[in-house]
Image (cartoon, rainbow, N blue to C red; front, side, top):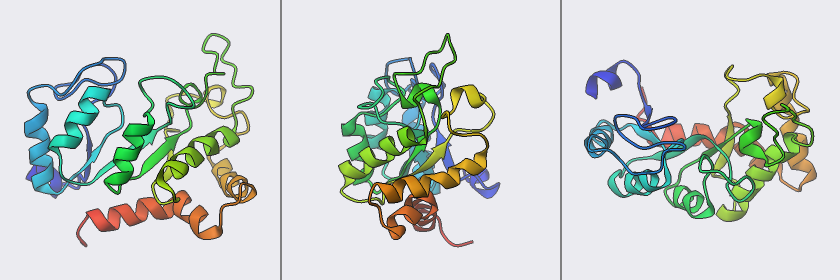
Length: 209
């Protein structure tokens, strides 16, 4: 782990889909594997942050119990708005908030809305407003706008057909502030959600170079 730190690694996730060496993940219910706890201990000793994204629910809670360092979720949505184990339920979101973490809302349509039709590849009715629904839900649980951010997941794994219908390019992320303004958010909170919460978390968690 110190060697990974020296090469620049600062945030680690334990799994993706299925079961990894360290944990059960998306669509694979279960907890940490025997290698999970030692990995978390080594991460904490090194000062790394734990990305809770993709952890199966049991593994999520085990990881929070075992890991005392900083936590975040780089790309997650709200289960109350789109029911799937890939999303976090309100108790999980509250736990991240209590640990001063940040949840980056993802833009993958199947994570955003039950309206997503995989067979038809139809994103009608899923827009940037839907993304803001998830952001607002996190804020309502927190009682402030200091624990959510942009998680996007727009890294080439899918195209426009599986992104919000009113997104044409990544530049359309700049439309989110106007939606937040219409919903009554002030500039300071909008700036926090667009970038400030992530910057603040990284500055708090990582020593100055």
